[in-house]
Length: 169
Image 1: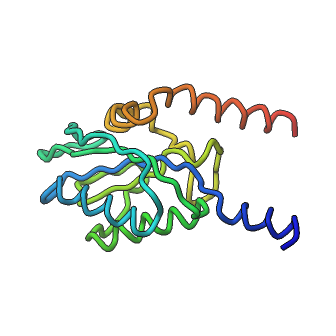
Image 2: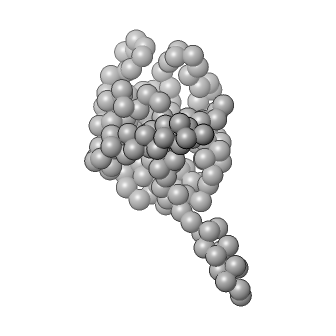
């Protein structure tokens, strides 16, 4: 085995640090989160850390149904696009029929958002990381602070690096 083969193999095995937000406000909420976490571990990667479950009020819409939320830190081999596809497939498998669009939110069995992917700034037509509204949402920041206490500094650093890169182009 050559040095190039070893380097290539090591690159293939690199785990990416991913932080996800999970929420549900329909049905058996605890079971919904537990099922989503089990499916994420089977399809995305090893769960490094998990927050406690947190009840929160709906954000961005009116509903009588409180949410149950959590945050996860996962090590994954998936690319950002593969991760997005996998989380959306889990949502569909669990019974979610539509994603929120244009700021119109509604009750849901499960919602899985990608908050952070390594310390990268990602902005494609389908995915924006760090999640653009994460710092405004207590249902994200409170569970995330349990597993990543310096999350605000991490997000600020990612955005600062992205802005510096853009300004040097």
